Every structure is written in C-alpha cells, then in structure tokens.
Length: 154
Image (cartoon, rainbow, N blue to C red; front, side, top):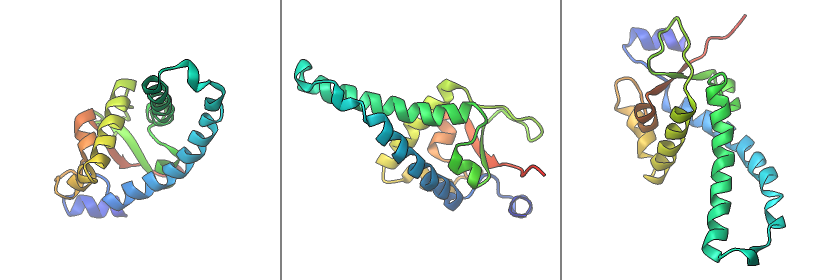
C-alpha cells in the first residue's frame, strides 16, 4: 500500500524512518557479532607490537568484521536481518523493477565507507534523502545502489 501511495504521489525510494529502523535492528545484531569477534583479541600480547600498530590492527579487525557482516548480506540477497524485518532490499541502481540485480563487493565497501562518513557528518548523508527526489542518501548515490521495498512472498 505504501509503495503504491508513493508512486501516486510521485515519490520514489524508501523513507528515512524505515531506513533508521532497519539500522537499529542491524545494530543489535552487530553488537553481538562484534562482542563475539572481540573475544580472541586479548590473546595477542600488546607488548609485541608498537602501541600505534596495536591500536590500528584492532580497528582494522573490527572494520573487517563489520564489512563482512554487511557485505555478505548485501551481496547475497540484498538484505540484512534488519532490512528483512522492515521489508527493504538493496539493489544495484541499474536494476529494473522486474529484474533484481545485486550489488557487488566493491559497491558494498564503498556504501559502508560513505555511510560511516554520513554518520560522522552528524547524519547529513541520511538527512539528504529528505530533499532528494528519489529519497537517496549519500551512500546510495556514491555506490550506485538503492534501497527498495521488498515484495512479500506468499
């Protein structure tokens, strides 16, 4: 119903509140995943590395965990668990309505990096969707992807 109403009103894309709700759901899963992924980190002694390198590899490790989470779901099916709950799907911007074209690993990495920059800019990248006619965010535009409503299978 929302999708047909948006088409009648000339609006495209997914609303900001729906995006934020999916992000909230995903953050709950991601906190658990990062907690589990962090368990072996204390096993590597700190005194074997320079302090800057010790801190750097930890951040890189966490970045890889987050990228693996989002990348896997986006490349294989276009939906994280939060996106599935809110019936959202990530597709390549070149997708047609009748053909689903998933994003690739490079697009997923670019999307994640620009999304982090959007948050670092106090959410301006997300607020951009309020003014964009297609409701795209900065990371949608940069990665040439888009969120769309996933149709419920019956």
